[in-house]
Length: 70
Image 1 (cartoon, rainbow, N blue to C red):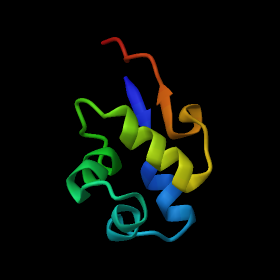
Image 2 (cartoon, rainbow, N blue to C red; image 1 turned 180 degrees about the horizontal axis):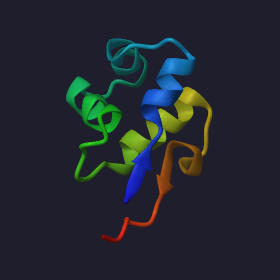
Image 3 (cartoon, rainbow, N blue to C red; image 1 turned 90 degrees about the vertical axis):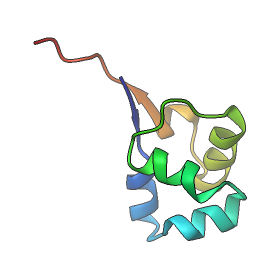
């Protein structure tokens, strides 16, 4: 599973979804899906804009975690 750290990054900077949308030009729905970790797919341009905004690498924004076995 892919873990998105957008909510943590936004919290550290006290940013709202509207702030991120305004700064990046991304649609609010895209940001919300990443924030809630419910996105099924993400455009590379969106990842690029978020990494640039927060000054982080892709690995700091997204993290792969193995699925938990039952």
